Length: 268
Image 1: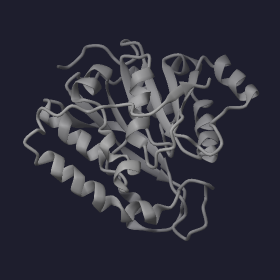
Image 2: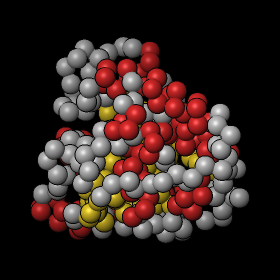
Image 3: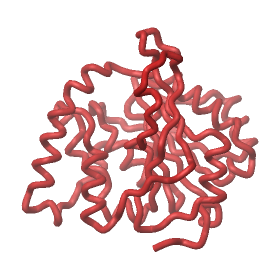
């Protein structure tokens, strides 16, 4: 149903970001957060999930102070088991610990600038039966390639109520690369499960997410913005096959996902 309240009136949002060896991306995220005004910061709780990075995710003490002074609450949780491509598990953990009733998930190379975050919180009135996606504006290269103008919605940038997330069953950790050897498709499968449970995908009009890109020439504009992209893409077919097997299973409608199959702890 359509809610009369804006997200600000509903108490704000939890912003869930999974990270893995993404020091530069975290720096860029912090630079972006510091451009938000204090009123916006006080409506956002940032939940960072460190997916067992080689060097545990951390934020400098002085930076913490600057974020706190703006009213932005930031917490870090670390997954202690080293599971390859465990984004579904990281997002499940984010939803489990997120304190707000509404949550926004974003990959570590995606962001909302100050204007778009303000619009999202102050003007947007969500429906409880929708899973919201956002179109993108890409940053990171000046090379004239038509696909860079693509504003197709971002698969892993999603806004929904926590109630909806858990009714759908969360992200299926069977798609974790540690178990399958494959990458991705957990978000596509989540969309299928959402539809089966009566939740529709909706594209938010006029509120745009940013996405940082490496240069197409191979020289990164933003260092450390991509990790073994070819090996990840080459394994999509494994998880795609798993998704089709699950969707075509007689147990698809009644399936139950077991989430958080790992040890974790709060580090900040």
